[in-house]
Image 1 (cartoon, rainbow, N blue to C red):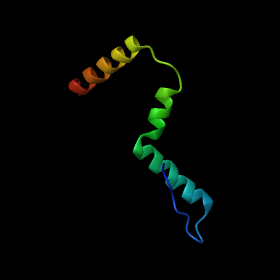
Image 2 (image 1 turned 120 degrees about the horizontal axis):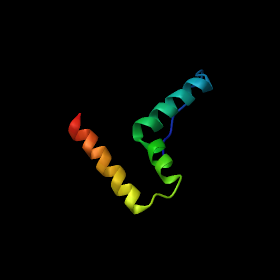
Image 3 (image 1 turned 135 degrees about the vertical axis):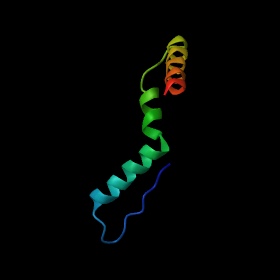
Image 4 (image 1 turned 45 degrees about the vertical axis):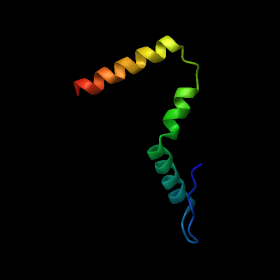
Amino acid sequence: MSKVEVGPNEPLEKALKRFKKKIEREGILKVLKTRKHYEKPSEARRRKARSSKNRRRG
């Protein structure tokens, strides 16, 4: 679980921005998006193969 300490005179918007950056760096949003819908095992294999092919190419 990610936490962000808010300073005594820090605006809430600034703390929220830091929280969003932290979540993005940890990859939590990516995991949530992938788990939002069911993915068939064949689709997962196809997606993984495509991503590895792109990594090898570039």
